[in-house]
Amino acid sequence: MKFYPMGKDKPHSRYIGEILRVSDLADVVKLQQGRGFTFFSADDVQRLELPTNLAITKPSPYTHTIVAYVERESSAPKQYILGEINENNAARAACDNAKAQQKTPTNR
Image (cartoon, rainbow, N blue to C red):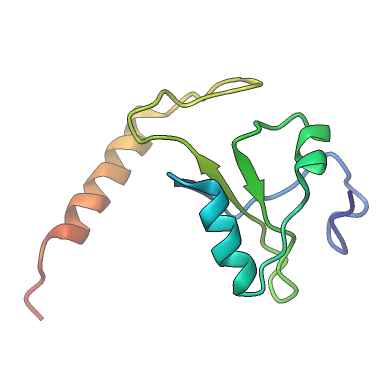
């Protein structure tokens, strides 16, 4: 698998711009492919020892950003093949606060 051009000299480090939780991975991949997104194959994802419920886009030709989609219910624990995610409580509180503010109408 090749992540060019920016990552060619650092084969074991990658920046994934976003990891988005979805409820139907196959539908999301099909929709995004229809929009011109390309994805790494399931074999490529497996070779990286990443979870099988993950789809990863190839780098954007414009920004070199990679987007990943993970199929997981919102109530499911955030466990992955390589271990369990550790969340920073302050970061989680800031994220929850931002989500609450998005739902609050503004007076503009």
